Image 1 (cartoon, rainbow, N blue to C red):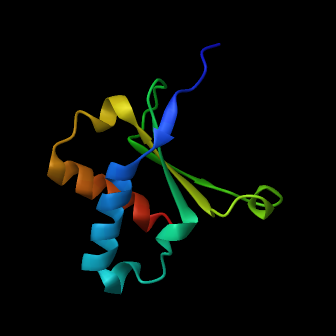
Image 2: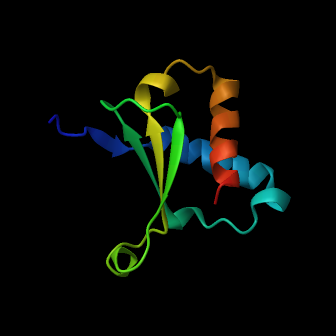
Length: 94
């Protein structure tokens, strides 16, 4: 089985910061420091973005409440506006 290749996704994190700042009335309850943005490079998924809740007991050792996963192959097919919409949609799930 192939090892999953991933990295911290600064692009998506920056988009999320911009969206939360611009639409404070919609996303005021979101603490971005509790979300780890990760880009998955070599796995296929039918979704572009997937949220994973980090629950007990794992959240005792990890400073995050969510993994915000982005699947690279589909992400790279989006234009800038579609990327913003995808990130906003993901933030609604939190």
